[in-house]
Amino acid sequence: MSAEISSPDTVRPIIWHDDRLRLLDQRLLPGMVEYLDFGNAADVAKAINQMVVRGAPAIGITAAYGVVLAARAAYRKDPEEWRTALQSDLDTLAQSRPTAVNLHWALQRMQSLFNKIKGNPEPALLREALTIHEEDIAANRHMGALGAALIADCRQVLTHCNTGSLATGGYGTALGVIRSAWQAGTLEMVYASETRPWLQGARLTAWELQQDNIPVTLIADSAAGFLLSRGKVKWVVVGADRIAANGDIANKIGTYGLAVAARHHGVQMMVVAPASTFDLQTMTGADIPIEDRGPDEILRCAGKPTAPEGIAAWNPVFDITPAALIDVIVTEKGVIHRPDRHKIAAIIQ
Ligand code: MRU
Image (cartoon, rainbow, N blue to C red):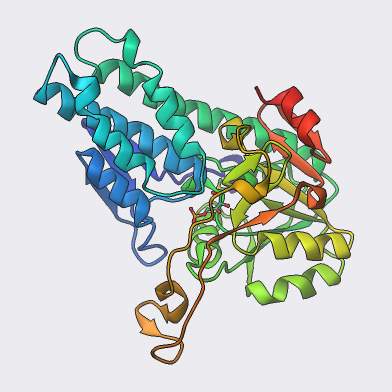
């Protein structure tokens, strides 16, 4: 085993530093590694909306730190009525992106402390945000071990989007499983799909795996079906932005097509997501809001037009994969084979 294999997790997208929130600007990767500092909640919400930070668990953690900044400003404005004063910041954070339920989960968890706090809310809220952040990394490591055990006989996997340290507090969900399998010495190589139009696979997953010396081969999204038909890849391993009560999942656009192709070719489909990604109030995938980021991401690449001026484009950035196409969901609370409403309810409260 090489020295690199023993430390495969070096990237951290979210850092609380010097009383401010520091985010790795993912819009600039892989060309530039630059952190931006944030001192107020409105700017944090804008950073989530504009994808400075992205990935469901990372959005939730960032929003939790956003609540700390909102509470600081509200307490300075009105030490008695800070709970009322921060309400508009909470609403702005909640509306920053629609699909990842981790955002609402984190905001609710922070809000559930409000009534227990006496005096300045910042220390208690910061402790909670740091705990959410640490728990996410711990959950990812645990899911990594659970998922890696399931793919122990698999030399190559395909992943989609970026589900790594960049998309979480650290370590990653689907990419955490891949890290763990690499570390265990069972996995030889990862195929990453480019993930048009924002190129999370090409720009982020390829960069993150390269930082940690995990071999990666990039494919165009349109090559995935052919890859699966060749029989070398036995598992597709992806994350999720929201999992409905019946096990349908919302994830990056293209996941559904991968699941259909995987089932057709006898390839197994693994979804890796922490409990904070489950939304048991939402009964099926049909009820999950899907973000549409507008035509520009389709019509331009790095600012340059890639289609004729004036053409229409549709850009839903997530899709729904029905539970019936998922072989296993890996959570930190355990593994759910052939997920359905009852198995999910038994594991996720
Ligand atoms: O639009 P993004 O980049 O925020 O979408 C991210 C994804 O779809 C990920 O697959 C998902 O959040 C799981 S990440 C651990």
